[in-house]
Figure 1 (cartoon, rainbow, N blue to C red):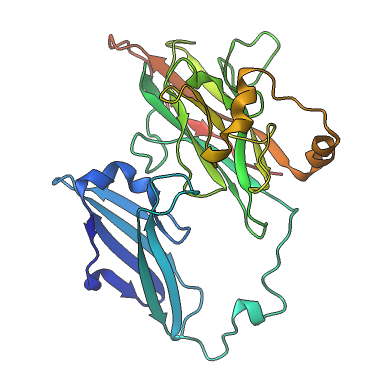
Figure 2 (tube, rainbow, N blue to C red; figure 1 turned 90 degrees about the vertical axis):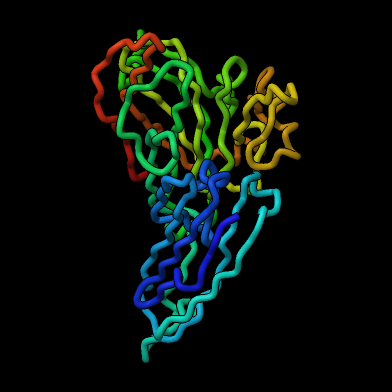
Length: 315
């Protein structure tokens, strides 16, 4: 699968782990984790293999033992990892260092407070922000969204609504193309091959959107309503569903065995139950925009290449 030689572990005031993976794993580099941490850097080698680098600082150190797991999870989080490697690191501990859980002024957990939302267009390798906003017709646009959890309890980020529009702001006469409707139903997956990619963390999501003919050759903007929610309380109004042509049914991204809550994508997902009304205040949402992107056909139609913009905000 890959080599993990001992000399590739470096530990001073920071932790560095380098891992060379075989070519068959390169397309899935975004699914490699050190605990909950993504790789700091990834390179594709001329041989087709890949170098994965984890490089993280320790705030304090003096012979503190850190142990974590390097895992490859190609399936949703409900499925076990394909393989897990135990990583143990030893750092030098300061004389006056006190573990966080013994410090009465640290380790608070709150369900409310400021949240920072992000949304951006990723490059084809899913390794960073796209450098071009020119999208060939039929190719994929990875739309990444995330929320900084900070001291919050674990949060699940959902895309409740998304549309493509020809304007950065929505007006009554704006031309729009629905992508996600009915509180989390990826309706664009019915006709095309759009899909939600497996998550690497509950607080982020990637919409793998196949480009379409709407607004061909024009500047387009992706408008989304992002919602954070309790990961253990998905229902008809809080979900991420896409249509699987293989199974001929709607599937739930986070817990495929509970895909029955996606069945409303074929009808109406609204509910007026007292429980839903009472729970509305528990979720936080924000409307975000990414763009412009320009979809061009395969005939080589020229379009001016401008760097895509993204919006982040604190609520």
